[in-house]
Image 1 (cartoon, one colour):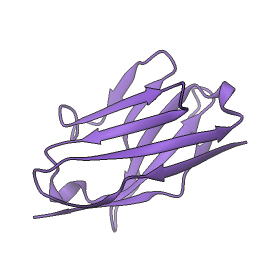
Image 2 (cartoon, one colour; image 1 turned 180 degrees about the horizontal axis):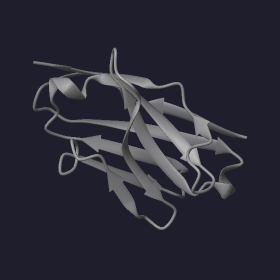
Image 3 (cartoon, rainbow, N blue to C red; image 1 turned 180 degrees about the vertical axis):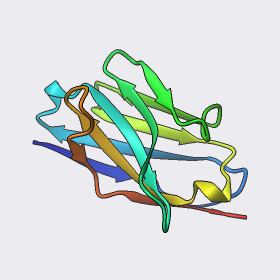
Image 4 (cartoon, rainbow, N blue to C red; image 1 turned 30 degrees about the horizontal axis):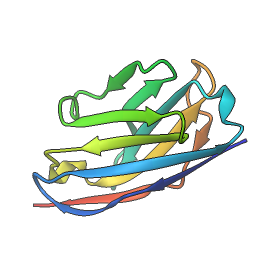
Length: 117
């Protein structure tokens, strides 16, 4: 089992920056990919960004160039640095971890990011 705990959400004005963190614990040695997803009110959960063990990253088009995902393997932590935030970035952000190519196996409880206009 893997436990994921997000932190760092909050309220920020449009154009501002925020960093959310996800600390992983438990049986982390089999984790291949970690990612951030988000779910806005009335919308489906979507992948925001992901990063593999070797550092390969992937971003949804709407955040590319504004968000940066990174991981600190020594701290078992993945980060999402968000810049030039827009009101449409408002959502609950979830951390996820996957053991293989089939998708994510573990999920955090989420952290709310609110961007005011």
